[in-house]
Image 1 (tube, rainbow, N blue to C red):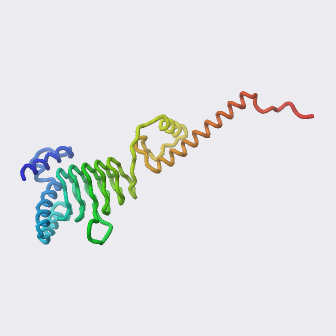
Image 2 (cartoon, one colour):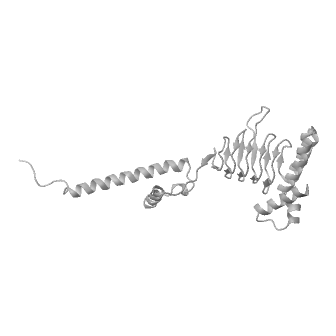
Image 3 (cartoon, rainbow, N blue to C red):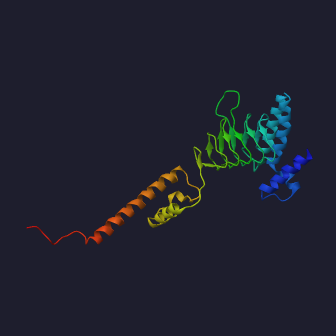
Length: 240
């Protein structure tokens, strides 16, 4: 028990730069308190003591601002930062080393019984205000941006942003990317302030426009070269 508590405190020091001392963390961290309450409530729930478990969960919500259903399965080193407004549903499954921030909802989209809440694999991070809804799976190491709404499975290592949530694929800058950025600067256009290492579907569409403009510029330049090489259109010969 005490080893697990030490582990929880160590996680807070690792992920929260505002943590200053173990005593302060133990006394003032709502995320830590919510975790401790949940372990007790989950223990009661698994032994069929559903009413005491739900009452304990209700008390924890009142004291910490974090609502975790006692049926939820939470892995080790689960970090809740700030905590206020976090809601975690009954059939949620959270693996080790996951982190969530305030205002996060791990909720359901159905009134049917059975699995209806998300599954988080190891190392998932969910930003403030994000909503992850339904019996979906967030792959290992996935990142969910603040205020995103996610209703579909997320591949391992992917980053999701937006409403509805869409995957942001990271890639290495290449020659074509540099060409697009140069063209965008010349025409006074910065596509949504996006950076080259985080394109999204909208960015991809804008990249296609920039590629097309670049192609047209090359064709025009080639036509000008040919006209100059041939001496240009004849204007003085006339016809009999």
